[in-house]
Image 1 (cartoon, rainbow, N blue to C red):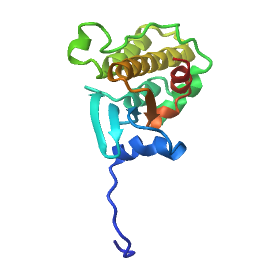
Image 2 (image 1 turned 60 degrees about the horizontal axis):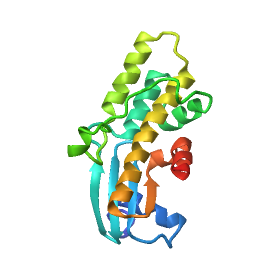
Image 3 (image 1 turned 45 degrees about the vertical axis):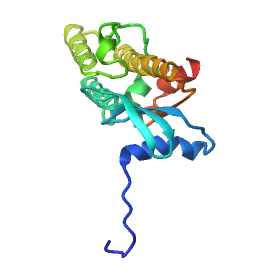
Image 4 (image 1 turned 90 degrees about the vertical axis):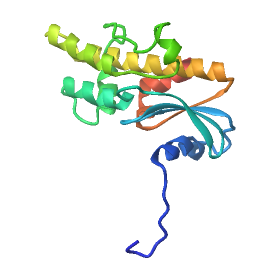
Length: 186
């Protein structure tokens, strides 16, 4: 306004939804967007430009928040996502069986495409408290695997249920190497 330039409002989350079109402007609708960032974890069904709806979301902490908190537990610094991703590369993702929130059959009745990462954060905290000789890389890899597994299991289920063949992962957490590798694999 001071520079006498036009002021254009942009919805932060909507910008994440369209980010995939920067890489490939020929992506066709409909598409399912897994929007994972520091403060948001959503499934958005995009049927066309401006025609979208949220079909699932976190009921507590976002995936990015969980990465940040667990990175603090492990003294890995901030932002937590890249720090955990780096540390996890030398760890065993199967070393610790951390919980996968809202994935049990009873959870899927009311929260089929919703997420919960607060219990996972608590599980990591408790594991660290009772296991003083833990291997940081194994904790990072096992935690990361739990988050990625939930995101992709639910995303693929939602894509199949809606008949949508295009799956987009957007937001800061989309840069996670394990998420990208496992998404391609699955």
